[in-house]
Image 1 (cartoon, rainbow, N blue to C red):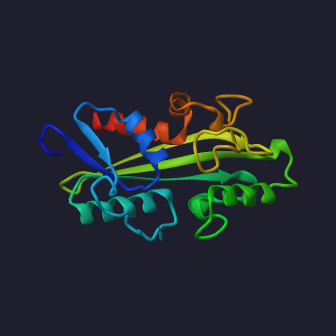
Image 2: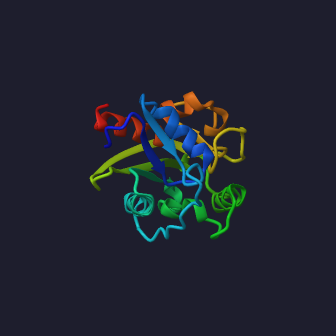
Length: 202
């Protein structure tokens, strides 16, 4: 990347929770992670036409890199529920429709699992991060977090399906009941960010 004192990377998201996780995990000295809004612009409307998390992350990173002329980082993350054949998967953010809220998506998921017993509610969060450097080179990192889907939303932290997801690493608590440091230590995005950090060897 640039030899400038501040290494600015645009993150392909308008989600401040996701940005906070990225900034917390990639706290490199001299790095600045910003959004399009931080640069005075608007989030890009990138059509996620890929059928994998990696494909969608690449589409977003490429769009931001080309539009803003900066290194760009994008992640595509989602929930894979075994009893639903891996759904909602790449459609996690729009499971209940294009304009669905987190509450809408969670309600649909609980409805889909209404008759599914506890032992069959296994699931995982998966995250793939693509970082495109100034010269167009790519670094790809992957992470996952195993767990299960609860029967009701609990917790005020996080976003997305966090209030329903019971990570195996923290028995009895949902992802939304963890503070940011606890979440980063076990989450799919945290794992992917640690893998990215190691790959960058900074």
